[in-house]
Length: 322
Image (cartoon, rainbow, N blue to C red; front, side, top):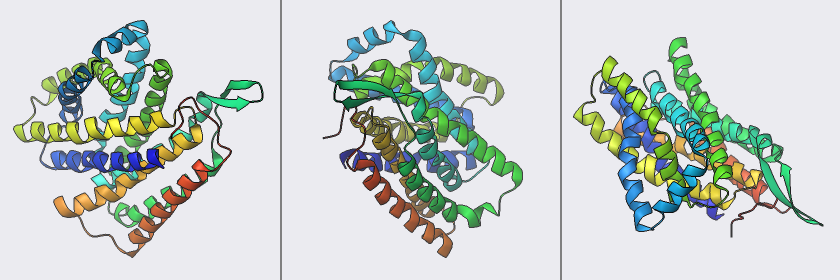
């Protein structure tokens, strides 16, 4: 249960992303700066954390071993995850983006065959290719159904263009985030802690953000003071606190694709947190009866997913939760 609880806390802080990104867009800010500034502001916080823990040199040593892998998977896991989310904020409200983002629950499960897990046999530990956890995936579909019900009434008010530009980029992000995260877990092989890995991925993704920032300066000019402040809040809440919590949760169940899918399923709570945040801060319309049915399905799906993913018989990973 510990990885599940950590995942829920991560979802709470991740929800700030959808609310603040929508707020910045409504104020006229560009998605380019909403995306790139977050990772610029993340750097000093992460560097201080890793320095205090005296783990900076081992991180650089590890990154020098496979620089191309760090650059590739960090760009995918951070760049192709967050830039599309910020782009989508210009075409859809935060609640719709948060709801569509829950595709990562299913995407994470569908990616399982791309990775290897460690199982215990009568001859000892053995590496086998991961399988799609269909029982857990079924619970994820229940969660997704609840999310759809929560938003189905509001989506009728959006144009086709808004739906496409607000949803398709988020679907890309839904595949990129778990793919980049899991690949970096394989590259590190447990040699780095969560703080080192997040800092390493932030550093390795900097070329992407620098190029995007140059493009922003040329096309839209520098960011406003308001957008800079809000981006710093996103960096602290979502970029530092939520990312570290989520990566810590995934590290606890590394190698067990079923439990990993359960941790990723906790991110469905972002919808609830984002909805409450928009009600209080952006004065969005209150949910109607159908939406509340969706809330019940999401919560029920979470409980069922946790039960199915933690019952006896799950594969044994290299780092199991206590």
